[in-house]
Picture 1 (cartoon, helix red, strand yellow):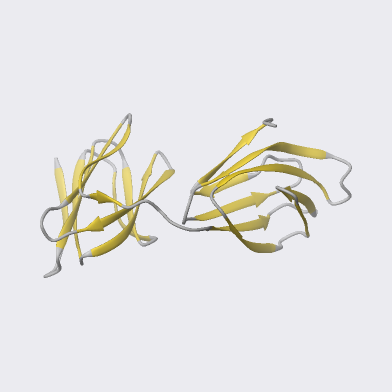
Picture 2: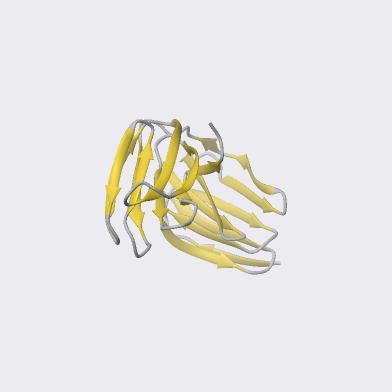
Length: 182
Protein backbone atom coordinates (compact mmCIF):
# COMPACT_ATOMS: atom_id res chain seq x y z
CA UNK A 1 0.00 0.00 0.00
CA UNK A 2 1.21 3.48 -0.85
CA UNK A 3 1.04 6.38 1.56
CA UNK A 4 0.94 10.04 0.64
CA UNK A 5 1.70 12.46 3.46
CA UNK A 6 1.17 16.20 3.38
CA UNK A 7 1.88 18.06 6.54
CA UNK A 8 3.26 20.89 8.54
CA UNK A 9 3.06 22.05 12.13
CA UNK A 10 -0.73 22.38 12.00
CA UNK A 11 -3.29 21.04 14.44
CA UNK A 12 -4.83 17.72 13.36
CA UNK A 13 -5.00 15.15 10.59
CA UNK A 14 -7.50 14.15 7.94
CA UNK A 15 -6.75 10.57 6.88
CA UNK A 16 -8.30 8.99 3.79
CA UNK A 17 -7.90 5.22 3.54
CA UNK A 18 -8.79 4.61 -0.11
CA UNK A 19 -9.34 1.08 -1.37
CA UNK A 20 -10.55 2.32 -4.79
CA UNK A 21 -9.37 5.19 -7.06
CA UNK A 22 -10.16 8.41 -5.17
CA UNK A 23 -9.54 12.14 -5.42
CA UNK A 24 -9.44 14.37 -2.33
CA UNK A 25 -10.29 18.07 -2.34
CA UNK A 26 -10.32 20.34 0.72
CA UNK A 27 -12.33 23.58 0.56
CA UNK A 28 -12.85 22.88 -3.14
CA UNK A 29 -9.13 22.68 -3.94
CA UNK A 30 -7.63 19.40 -5.19
CA UNK A 31 -5.14 17.90 -2.75
CA UNK A 32 -4.41 14.35 -3.91
CA UNK A 33 -5.53 11.66 -6.33
CA UNK A 34 -4.76 7.94 -5.98
CA UNK A 35 -5.34 5.11 -8.42
CA UNK A 36 -4.39 2.12 -6.27
CA UNK A 37 -5.18 1.29 -2.62
CA UNK A 38 -3.51 4.10 -0.67
CA UNK A 39 -3.62 6.19 2.46
CA UNK A 40 -3.64 10.00 2.25
CA UNK A 41 -2.80 12.05 5.33
CA UNK A 42 -3.25 15.83 5.41
CA UNK A 43 -2.82 18.09 8.42
CA UNK A 44 -5.36 20.87 8.89
CA UNK A 45 -5.88 23.60 11.47
CA UNK A 46 -8.70 23.16 13.95
CA UNK A 47 -12.13 24.23 12.77
CA UNK A 48 -14.74 23.24 10.21
CA UNK A 49 -13.34 21.89 6.94
CA UNK A 50 -15.16 21.11 3.69
CA UNK A 51 -13.94 17.75 2.35
CA UNK A 52 -14.90 16.42 -1.09
CA UNK A 53 -14.08 12.84 -2.09
CA UNK A 54 -14.50 11.92 -5.75
CA UNK A 55 -15.16 8.20 -6.12
CA UNK A 56 -15.85 6.92 -9.65
CA UNK A 57 -16.14 10.55 -10.71
CA UNK A 58 -19.01 11.23 -8.30
CA UNK A 59 -18.39 13.89 -5.65
CA UNK A 60 -19.31 13.21 -2.04
CA UNK A 61 -19.31 16.24 0.24
CA UNK A 62 -18.55 16.27 3.95
CA UNK A 63 -18.19 19.03 6.50
CA UNK A 64 -16.10 17.92 9.44
CA UNK A 65 -14.94 19.66 12.57
CA UNK A 66 -11.21 19.10 12.97
CA UNK A 67 -10.18 18.75 16.59
CA UNK A 68 -6.69 18.51 17.98
CA UNK A 69 -7.41 15.41 20.06
CA UNK A 70 -7.80 12.85 17.23
CA UNK A 71 -7.54 12.49 13.46
CA UNK A 72 -10.60 12.37 11.21
CA UNK A 73 -10.71 9.14 9.17
CA UNK A 74 -12.47 8.51 5.87
CA UNK A 75 -12.58 4.94 4.57
CA UNK A 76 -13.35 4.76 0.84
CA UNK A 77 -14.40 1.40 -0.54
CA UNK A 78 -16.56 -0.15 -3.24
CA UNK A 79 -19.71 0.37 -1.17
CA UNK A 80 -19.16 4.05 -0.40
CA UNK A 81 -17.47 6.31 2.12
CA UNK A 82 -17.47 5.89 5.90
CA UNK A 83 -16.32 8.44 8.43
CA UNK A 84 -14.87 6.35 11.24
CA UNK A 85 -13.64 9.08 13.55
CA UNK A 86 -14.09 12.81 13.74
CA UNK A 87 -17.05 15.05 13.93
CA UNK A 88 -19.41 15.50 11.01
CA UNK A 89 -21.02 18.91 10.93
CA UNK A 90 -24.52 19.24 9.51
CA UNK A 91 -24.66 21.89 6.80
CA UNK A 92 -26.79 24.88 7.64
CA UNK A 93 -28.79 27.48 5.81
CA UNK A 94 -29.66 27.97 2.18
CA UNK A 95 -27.77 26.47 -0.72
CA UNK A 96 -26.38 28.35 -3.68
CA UNK A 97 -27.64 27.05 -7.01
CA UNK A 98 -26.19 28.20 -10.32
CA UNK A 99 -28.27 27.68 -13.43
CA UNK A 100 -26.17 27.34 -16.61
CA UNK A 101 -27.48 27.05 -20.16
CA UNK A 102 -25.02 25.00 -22.21
CA UNK A 103 -27.08 24.31 -25.33
CA UNK A 104 -27.48 26.30 -28.54
CA UNK A 105 -30.97 27.49 -27.72
CA UNK A 106 -32.64 29.21 -24.82
CA UNK A 107 -34.70 27.41 -22.18
CA UNK A 108 -37.70 28.01 -19.94
CA UNK A 109 -36.92 26.55 -16.53
CA UNK A 110 -39.61 26.42 -13.85
CA UNK A 111 -38.31 25.78 -10.34
CA UNK A 112 -41.09 25.57 -7.79
CA UNK A 113 -43.38 28.46 -8.73
CA UNK A 114 -40.64 30.62 -10.30
CA UNK A 115 -40.15 30.78 -14.07
CA UNK A 116 -36.67 31.52 -15.47
CA UNK A 117 -36.22 32.39 -19.15
CA UNK A 118 -32.53 31.86 -19.95
CA UNK A 119 -30.64 32.37 -23.22
CA UNK A 120 -27.72 30.34 -24.62
CA UNK A 121 -24.62 30.61 -22.40
CA UNK A 122 -26.51 32.50 -19.70
CA UNK A 123 -25.83 31.89 -15.97
CA UNK A 124 -28.02 32.76 -13.02
CA UNK A 125 -27.30 32.26 -9.31
CA UNK A 126 -30.08 31.47 -6.86
CA UNK A 127 -30.31 31.00 -3.12
CA UNK A 128 -32.46 27.95 -2.35
CA UNK A 129 -33.65 26.58 0.94
CA UNK A 130 -33.01 22.84 1.43
CA UNK A 131 -35.80 20.62 0.19
CA UNK A 132 -37.47 19.33 -2.94
CA UNK A 133 -38.65 21.55 -5.79
CA UNK A 134 -40.83 20.60 -8.77
CA UNK A 135 -38.96 21.24 -12.04
CA UNK A 136 -40.15 21.76 -15.61
CA UNK A 137 -37.67 22.31 -18.48
CA UNK A 138 -38.91 23.47 -21.89
CA UNK A 139 -37.63 25.12 -25.04
CA UNK A 140 -37.52 28.94 -25.15
CA UNK A 141 -41.07 29.15 -26.58
CA UNK A 142 -42.44 26.72 -23.99
CA UNK A 143 -43.86 24.32 -26.58
CA UNK A 144 -41.49 21.33 -26.23
CA UNK A 145 -41.22 19.71 -22.80
CA UNK A 146 -37.74 18.24 -22.25
CA UNK A 147 -37.89 17.27 -18.61
CA UNK A 148 -40.18 17.19 -15.60
CA UNK A 149 -39.26 16.01 -12.18
CA UNK A 150 -38.01 17.02 -8.76
CA UNK A 151 -34.81 18.84 -7.79
CA UNK A 152 -33.52 17.81 -4.34
CA UNK A 153 -31.38 20.47 -2.67
CA UNK A 154 -29.10 19.67 0.28
CA UNK A 155 -28.55 22.31 2.99
CA UNK A 156 -25.65 24.79 2.93
CA UNK A 157 -23.90 23.64 -0.22
CA UNK A 158 -23.25 24.68 -3.80
CA UNK A 159 -25.22 23.16 -6.64
CA UNK A 160 -24.74 23.61 -10.40
CA UNK A 161 -27.68 22.87 -12.71
CA UNK A 162 -26.69 22.60 -16.38
CA UNK A 163 -29.55 23.05 -18.81
CA UNK A 164 -29.42 22.17 -22.50
CA UNK A 165 -32.04 21.86 -25.20
CA UNK A 166 -33.50 18.37 -25.45
CA UNK A 167 -31.68 16.98 -22.39
CA UNK A 168 -32.38 16.25 -18.74
CA UNK A 169 -30.87 18.76 -16.29
CA UNK A 170 -27.35 17.74 -15.24
CA UNK A 171 -26.62 18.29 -11.55
CA UNK A 172 -23.21 18.78 -9.97
CA UNK A 173 -22.85 19.30 -6.24
CA UNK A 174 -25.11 18.68 -3.28
CA UNK A 175 -28.35 17.82 -4.99
CA UNK A 176 -30.09 15.50 -7.41
CA UNK A 177 -32.68 15.57 -10.19
CA UNK A 178 -35.29 12.83 -10.17
CA UNK A 179 -37.15 12.60 -13.47
CA UNK A 180 -40.88 12.03 -13.85
CA UNK A 181 -41.85 12.72 -10.26
CA UNK A 182 -44.92 14.78 -9.38
